[in-house]
Image 1: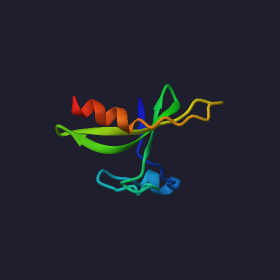
Image 2 (image 1 turned 30 degrees about the vertical axis):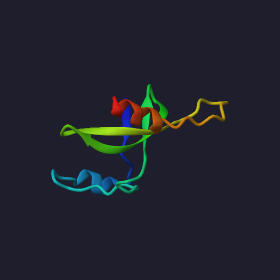
Image 3 (image 1 turned 135 degrees about the vertical axis):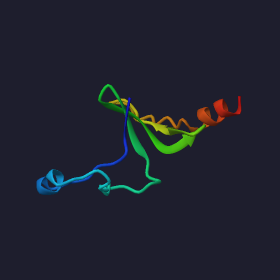
Image 4 (image 1 turned 90 degrees about the vertical axis):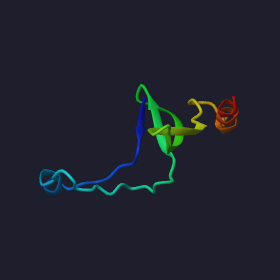
Length: 84
């Protein structure tokens, strides 16, 4: 599973001169949904969070398969599981 936080375009000369502690500005906001891929295919969208001190991603929706028009929100299932 891969969670894409965002992307940025960096010039070659800037990349070569990067040092520890440098900050790369991404093209999205902190609250934006992130793409979650499995086997190189985006399957879900989610938002960042923390669970018991660990970084986490909360799934917000399922990306429909090619040829399917159905969008499956996963929030009700996640909230139901959290209550148990």
